[in-house]
Length: 151
Image (cartoon, rainbow, N blue to C red):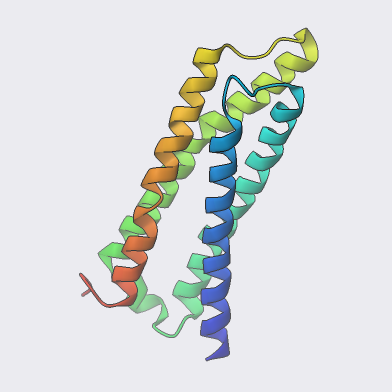
């Protein structure tokens, strides 16, 4: 019983961490607010976001293998595969942002130049899409936990 509770808690904490740091990126990635300190913070927030994303993936895998329902049940469920696919797709969608933040900071350090507002807007738009699409994952999780659309 404790194992299941702790696995659920860890997984939920990772979801909340991921939400917090995606939201932080959305708040910081604005061309009108961008300066050297914000660039440094964006990269730091992005690193923490990736830690939360990886911890979310690992805690979900741990729940599937060590949770009460067992791996056989979880891995036979289409909703689990949908959740995992969405998580991986959102990770793939976030990767260009990481590259952009790294490039922007390197550009600032070498040339003292901030990115163009259009480039910042593209990244911000991507962050906003990620922030909205990620809301589907908890919906699928609730459906899975309640036995909806399960085999």
